[in-house]
Length: 296
Image (tube, rainbow, N blue to C red):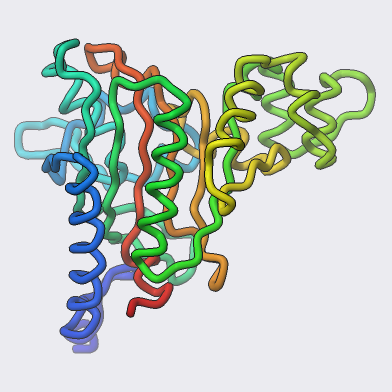
């Protein structure tokens, strides 16, 4: 009898006031993106599992709700927009179409069984610049993310790094960074030790990854004051749970609530996996969280 009044853990309805609030924020986001030349795309809520297997590792590989459909195919409910956008667009892209500026919105469903009270159903809006490998595109995306955070009533703080630095250090050092294990026996490059100690600088990075250091330096000079380079933020440095980041990786926080409201980065190899090579950078806002920042 009690089940009549309960919903599964992590999902709930949005009633009149909350629904209206979300719609206002969604409308602001869409209006800003359209005014900046972004075109909207719509994606399916389910897809086959197989195309995405190599793009997820660790906890992310277990986030999707999967099931066998009536045809005997293994399918999953949408849990991440970025790979789905690449899978949809890559086969249709012609060189003359680039760069593309697109945005998307909709629900994602994730298994978050280990986090008490964590949302399983989340509404997201994201944007991408496809076919532009320049630092200017990185800076534009960071500035746009900050502007959208402010449109949602947040005070943005954007923390960023470059995952290619970890790759340049080698597998052993990368594993040490992932596990946050400092080895002082000489088995790790000095840069890895400095990163884990919080003492690394861009000058240290240049010895191992000069292109990444130069790019981060250029981003720091072009991005707004709300953007902070943090070489010692290992979770960002190693790309988090997603295996597709290749360069800058960032997270957007609300300074007042300290909640993470968006995430993004550069994934220059992702489109090639689905048929057409194209550099890409983008972000995704979770509106359910960002809307709590204080809508006016």
